[in-house]
Length: 139
Image 1 (tube, rainbow, N blue to C red):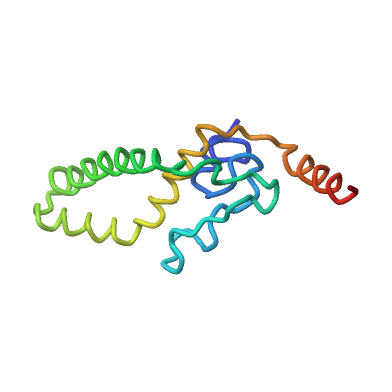
Image 2 (cartoon, rainbow, N blue to C red; image 1 turned 180 degrees about the vertical axis):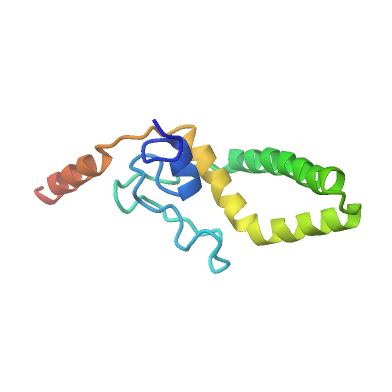
């Protein structure tokens, strides 16, 4: 299985797609949008997965964000300061500019990493949601 194709966790995380069906969006706006940057949909528009299973669910995503951002910062500054021989001020300035532009994407990817720990991909999730919706309409 390819790493970034539908059906893999990496596809769901970096494409910002629903972890169950890999088709529905999780956020109202695009990846680097500064309009409503933190607003998530409550359910998947395709398979009806509840994105907020309990209050405070995404608290763990904060730790994921902190860990991978800290490691990224170390490698980023190390690359520019020691390998490319930039000054320390230039390396940190470029890092701050990079993070200021990408903080929304980092926030979103961290939330996708967290929910992907608990939700498994189901290629038939959309069909199941449609059948369930049809059964509820028939009542």
